[in-house]
Image 1 (cartoon, rainbow, N blue to C red):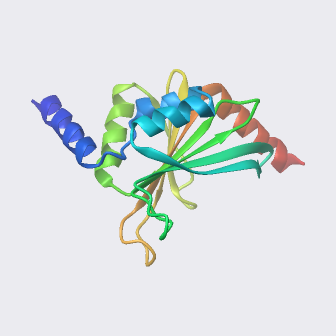
Image 2: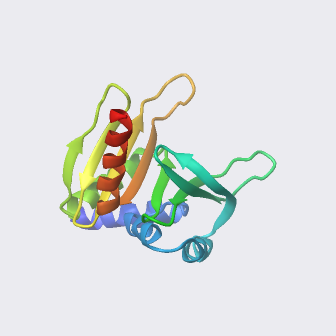
Length: 177
């Protein structure tokens, strides 16, 4: 019965909030080229908003592309955003912000069903939970409520597992120089 209620909630919430990207959607975006990602997102109602040529990100150069869901061009706002960092040497890195506790709990339940291993990040900076799966690493950051935002802000970043390890080796090398 619990599974049926959860399935209904996910279906209802996903229908009511069509901008919701599932973990399966995010994994697809990690693995495919930018053209395939663009087609995939367009089919889900998203619009390519911005495509920046090479941007320096820590120790690597990335092309950053962003898509919006129901973009208001005059206000530069949207119901949802997704960002893809891409370069020639790694898999895509996907960053997806959201503000809903329901989406947050949905992701946690899905990560639990995938039998990921959870590690906790440094709560002094922002609260980050890191989930290691067979092939992917999921980092969920929580920025608590404050005077600028009435709801907590969440970010999920999805990495290919090998790329995540490469990412941290690069950070450690930068700190040691």
